[in-house]
Amino acid sequence: MSQGVDPHSFTNKLEEIIGRELRERADDFSGELISAPAIDCHPWHGSIDLCFLTPQDSMGKWHLADWKYFQFTDPNASGGWEETQGLGLLMREEWEACFRDGDSECEGAQAELIADKFFTCCAAALKSAGVQQALTYYKLTNDFEVWVGSPDDPSDRNYCDIFQ
Image (cartoon, rainbow, N blue to C red):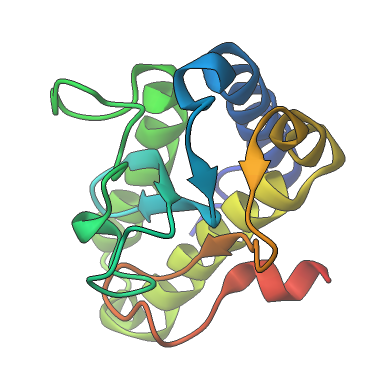
């Protein structure tokens, strides 16, 4: 199996996209308190979306789909955040290559490593200095945090904790 996507390049590009989006959209959220930004990442589908948790979101802390600002970067629910579609394609191609190569381990450990790689890249981008600086344009709660986790098991772990 090939090495696949370079995590450093992927993270840098995602950091650039998120930082730009946050700066451009700050006025849209001027009346909102933000408790957490989260990245909704699905390597197997090739999608990356940004979400915001607010204090009014009561359905569950990491139940992103229940949040008022779930995937706000895709306002028309048209198939993903347009700016991340290139990165999404890279994720999906690496995911699908694992299965195409006939690797019997793809059903388990190898697939999990691929997903972990992209969740970690998303967390690194969200915790980066550039994104953290862009978040200063927002009203943040006192218990503010950032989150990236597996959409299959959101209570499993927060990949952002790697970058304390």
